[in-house]
Length: 224
Image (tube, rainbow, N blue to C red; front, side, top):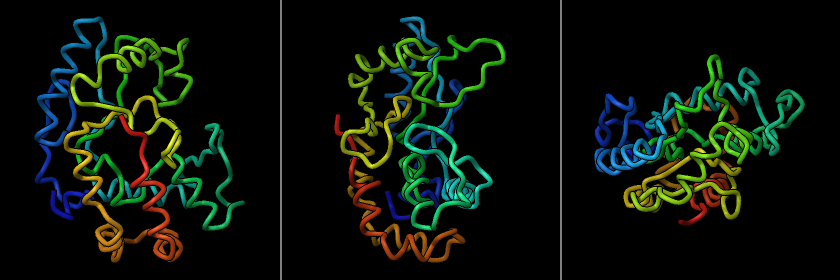
């Protein structure tokens, strides 16, 4: 991937899939469809609620959380008041759950947030919370199935709360053969260039600590 593809500023590396509806890296489509078929054979309707996400979408998420217009959560998933936090504290709070624009693995089209549509009760609103993927949660059986089978198709959980600065996300799966190449290519200089002209809230604080933030929240993942 070139720098614009790595940072979500281009879409030349992704294609749109009709069923299940998602946008993925061109080389992740076939493996994901194989995973989807295997899940369906075992009774799951594997659906991505998020696949490719571009830079502008990630920027809107970031600015919404920094300003307090979007919910900001602590490590336990409880809401916190952004107005009570200093800019560095807001940045740390956002990065627990959301990536910097230009640094999201979703930019690569290799990463998907997965649910089991067969487990949705009428009117259920998916939150992507740890409780939903616990043994007793609606997506607990899917989480267990993916833990056993995802690796056969090249997918793994990059955020398990062990090495990564990001909190554990049992719903987030990444296609390793492409994503690892992208992770290595997305160095701080590429990210800095992507952020240079962006209307990023807290930008001066982010750029002052970009190497540190990159090391903790981009370079550090939980390996397969």
